Image (cartoon, rainbow over all chains, first blue to last red; front, side, top):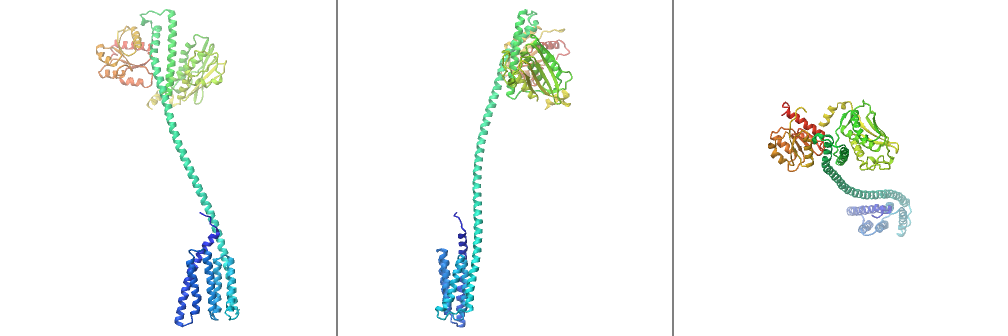
Length: 479
Length: 133
């Protein structure tokens, strides 16, 4: 699309004007011809002289009409205007003395037309031409210079017409300017809109491409997740199978050492010699430790498979702690270590799985006993509005701060000097943390090397409703 | 033990070490242990053996599981006490065993003291006609 100037716009307006002018002139000429012929035939006037200018005008108009399609505007308009002047001049030439007074008054109209067809200055040129015709034709006809007031008014009117035409054309130019300005602005806005739309489409395409990529990534991610889950599942399955395979021979080791140690009646009442008993006890406790480790692995495999179950009910902590503490005394029987139970008897009920809490507590006792060579292991409890916290403080080797989180991870242990290298895989704390989290609890440690450690676990308190253990147990089973 | 009687204990189990262990435990009361490694053999010989107490391992050789055997025995109208023995200490196992018709449930590794108590319990029950079924 080429740029559209105000001149082009004005030309277009003028072309339309010229076309209608030619059309109306044609109609006017034909009408005049018709009237003239009628008048001539009815009143027998001398019409030949009047036919000349009308004929010329008709010819000019017809020529202009045929010109307008193939020639530039200026050629057509110029031809038409000059032709019109010639026709009027011819009319003036052939007219009678009375008619010669009227005919000049056609010229201001023509001047006005010139003004509307050409730029304003041309109207004044036409006005001068009109004045020349009015003054010169009579001179050339040798009828003498008749410069009466009629002729003077015609000349004056021509100039007035030129002035009016100039004003009108100036308006036309102004309107054209305004229109082209608006047009340009609209074009610019439209262009911007078009560009915006293109940009929008590009953005849309980019977004769509990104969306596609996101979907692909998601698919890949789903695949990876599925693979990871599968791997986890296989790991869990493997650990479960392995622990089963390991437990079967362990059954015999633990079972027979137990029968030999505790039930002489099964051996026809023959008691084991003292020296055998000590070693067999070693086999029995090692077997128990191995079993515990295997059970821990099984528990972790269940965590992996999301199958570690806890049975939540409300229960009383102090008897449980007392019971585990009695068992734990056996862990330190060979060391100058004293276990002190400072847990009050009147703790509020907690809501948890009692067997799992027992497991956690025993894990803590095992660790404390393992890492305390002399001193005390003290268990305490503290009541909070929503929870109960049980803590176990030992006078053992302590744990450097950088290991405080690490020890709760699988198969990790804060292995530093002063620690027993035979101290196991350290699964107890990892399982304890998993178990406590399953029971809406938490476990953490506060410790400094050389100053002992305090392990604390937190359990939610039972609400009044849950204080009736049997009832809540039944409800949980039903749910 | 005021009332002492010798029991015939059937143990369906495919692990010889466990069989020996139960034999060792049974020896305390002088009881006899008859063992089978699969359910089909146990079912075939059941009437002939006529045991007083049955220990049934859940995972055994052959097509039948321990619980299938229990169901078959209960289907025959056998009312003798049956104790399920499972390797996995899993939640839900106990319910499954009781549903199949077992009187009780123990999980491996075999708890010696518990087994001893259990054997003695059924020994008393057997010798006292009031409680015997």
